[in-house]
Image (cartoon, rainbow, N blue to C red):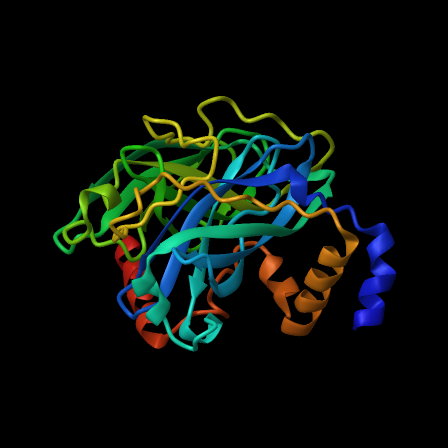
Length: 322
């Protein structure tokens, strides 16, 4: 496998320096996993087919405590477009074998864009959110409901909606996504309704800095896939933009900062390695772990679900959405 990866490197067109993390935050979820949620942006001139991120968590003493990786929730990220990610750190991901290091206070998370291949393909651009509204239910879940319309001339298939949720200062604090919408094939001029919830973040329990103030919606469809020069998203895209724009530099947010830490004051160095060996490592990992399959349109997390508890929770949320 390693030999095959080395042979493939000269043809690689990965441009990790063209993707950057623009916002993120962290929290410990209900089953004790350290979770980092955030958002990347394509700052280059070309469409990026898929994005793989790795992250390393550092505590206030400067020690690296845990590492993990994830696939960003997007396929065909066009120039200037943003998309969210959800990265989990289990006790097995940690240097100590547990999450006791969290008590030391988290200083920052350093990210590396491991894979960001350019492509001449792009998604069907004529799907729009024509209406949406959000609010908190009696269980503290923030829900967004709305309608997607096919305003183009082709039939779109297997549509999903992804939500990125922000606090009042524009930092990402949660995300959520739908299953494939009904109907699975959306013909021109027709609409499909959706409902999605923000994972993990119970709005009746979190501190004010974790309260959801606004959200951004991203539509993903498996077809049709077009070829050529991708369209430039309008300033208001994705459809439900937050009232305050997310910051242009990564902004960490800790719901339990240590006395010496000011939430949102640390900006990590976002790594954008250009070295071929970084790409080799990622390709080998993909081959060995089968992550290539995860790059298919949002087959996300089902094969990497952290526990039956979390799977049941998110499954229940999706059932409610239907």
